[in-house]
Length: 291
Image 1 (spheres, rainbow, N blue to C red):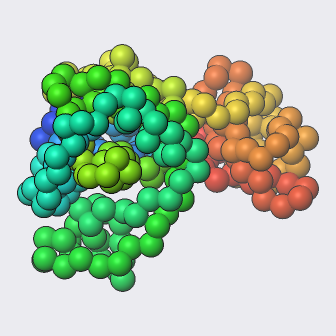
Image 2: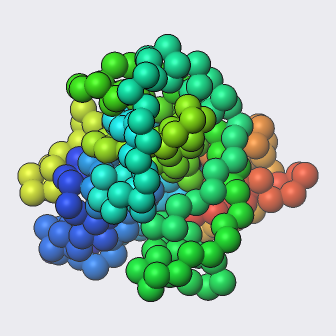
């Protein structure tokens, strides 16, 4: 079977790690070169982008796009993992908290904020991943990280003390930290449950497929990995230079601004992704076309 270069939009089920999905896709598509963009926790569901072949080199671009999540904020109970997978570490009587209270408190978490990564995460401190330290019973100081919450909507949940939350945020945002911090802002504590990623940039859960249902027919072309980024079409002469990875003047590509730019041929096939190089030139970050 020839190597497939493309992207698949997976609707990850609960209980699967992102690595499990990659391993399953290696078997489905019969190739080793498979990767994913934007890890989802095992308990979370929803959109996971999986790259095949040369598209694995493009995954940093869709991985950097804003993401949308839905989930439930459970007030009154804190857990070791900040979600319903962990052990209960504290309880609070928050029965008097109303939807208006939660909405008023949520306003402070919209915009540019800082988050402390949870101990149960893949962030590295001192060369070791936090979840490895947590399993060993260690807790270490973590530096706050800047993230952006573009939208945060709160509504009534399925039961008293539980509120639904819809969040659109920058890459690197921990929604379970958002839920825990919201609980603290309300004078108690909280954890997150039923987290579902409904979109990554322009990739929505509506086009996602369960990993068990995936087939070659579900593979999107490499250019789809650059949805949400500027696209420029070049004529064959320039396309040949692009295929050879040439550093070019912006005018040669017909681009301006900060990039990156998806460079395509007349058929709309992706040739390369270019980024700024210096004040007068742009360079290929990834070349997909064969020279």
